Length: 182
Image (cartoon, rainbow, N blue to C red; front, side, top):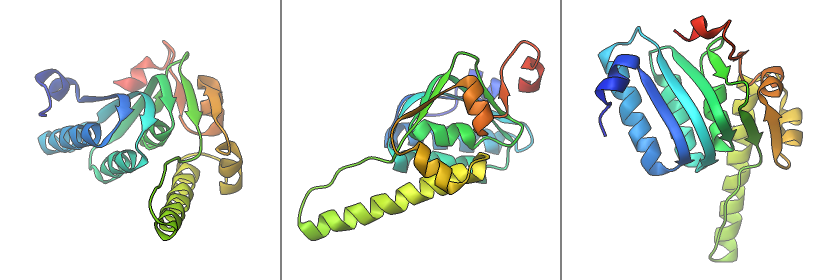
């Protein structure tokens, strides 16, 4: 899916619904196209998601990090699960959240079937991904790894202000800081 004329002009990408491999592929195509068109102008990523596949979210996260363009993130509505990583991945000073948005983070989840050995392999990989998820949140927030692990032990909900205090975003959007979005 190509970047629409509207998105090409405004340089906005919208992440909504569930994060899946298909939506990650569209995201990768859009961010790559916008980067190709102009590496200087920022790209704004709007995030309103229940989360989804951690693998898909990690590919989106990596695309945001390697993109030469400045990346602004705006959390609006709900930013949950794997979406939290995308919200926090915006450039420092360019991470926003709407005043009534809510954030929820939790452990990486998944499932396994097959032989005992196969299940053991999947479990080890899930532990590795969980550790990676925590490391990435440490990198983008003002929390240490021990605190991240305590907070994701079960669903942790945060208001916009709480996510600001957590270090996940830099600003709660108000009419006063709207200019920073431009």
